[in-house]
Image (cartoon, rainbow, N blue to C red; front, side, top):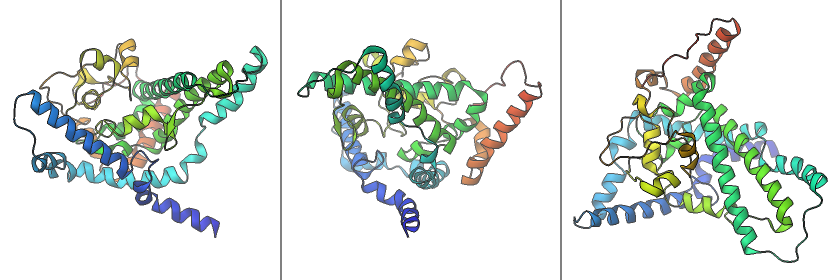
Length: 336
């Protein structure tokens, strides 16, 4: 009976998750992001000296049938359901989270540097430092995994699924192959786990992050503002100082560009600082038109079955060619 109950909960997760405040894809987060978008569009139009945006026009733009009914979006919805079920059941078995690294590294740090300090009461400044350190560690781990999936020919075959989107909606967030859904949390679980173990060693038990709905409070603010716009047709560029600090929706649209000059650029999640330091940052430009996708090759990603199977087949062929010593000296050019 317990197995049947767990199976039922997993199958219902795409629906029940929409009403879970702790779920980044919940209707609560989407609603907050929608209100944020409305405010952004109204302010942007006022600055241009035009009349205030009407709600009807705003919703017609946000929920454009050209985007939401596109064949690419229809596949996104199917993959959202399938991957949500997999994340709620099978995939968690393969993930190594931050707790593992805290438990592994914490005792080693204590043995090497002595036991963590003992403090009588919590300190807001310690919580603040820990919160910021954790979100930076998560973001760097995301960037590092993302960098690896772009630079490795084999891993790119799996990440190519995400880049085959021809239009983007918030559902595109889960237009991913299960291999990627497992790999990314493992990498940023490592970076956040190591960082938290260091925070505990330095500050003791007071090293707790400021949280809301079980998430880092900085991450919650991101989820309720421009996170869901990363995969959307809403142009929200950050430029200048803010563009070098934060990864805006316009930064991420460039990342999905089919233009070769944009390949392997803007791989951040919340921050742009890692791209800036690595020389992979491309700043959004006013009025720039972006075409999304990976060209005609994306046509093979036309069903859930092909999305799941083709990356394994293509990656297997690359591994076999390398094993036989017939791998080309230079990687084949990525198609746009």
